[in-house]
Image 1 (cartoon, one colour):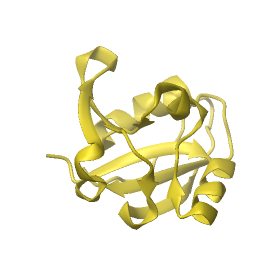
Image 2 (image 1 turned 90 degrees about the vertical axis):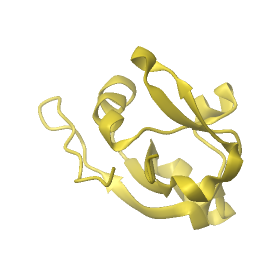
Image 3 (image 1 turned 180 degrees about the horizontal axis):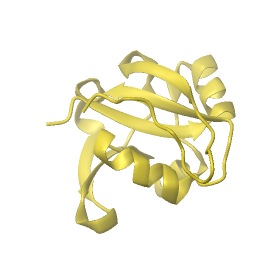
Length: 115
């Protein structure tokens, strides 16, 4: 299956996670009771649909295998399987965290991602 999954979150939420040693999720994750992730193939649509017009965002790359049995693949948008984490994300599962570029003329540039 997919080795790397991705999370977009507000920079402030990520700073809290770094201080805590784990990421409990964004407000939408806390509401839904799981942390929403995307695969590399799903990330551009996730960014456009849920983060349009927002700035001060982070892109977090996570080792899916390090998330344990709390990571579930569930059908969501368009019937695709999306990774959902039913636990806090331990920072030792994070491969990297980078600022996500702001949109340019309504399009958010994304870095090259590992599948």
